[in-house]
Image (cartoon, rainbow, N blue to C red; front, side):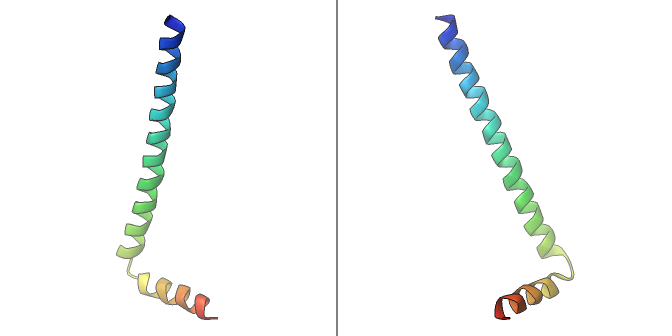
Length: 55
């Protein structure tokens, strides 16, 4: 009885940790995008990347 309860608690803990990790990575990606778009040389980086695609 107690064993089952403990196992389910552990599983929910693991799921919570995974969710937190997902959120952190998502946040970092969003931050990166925001930083890129708010930086003054974003146009140059966009130009550079588009040139790379063309070449």
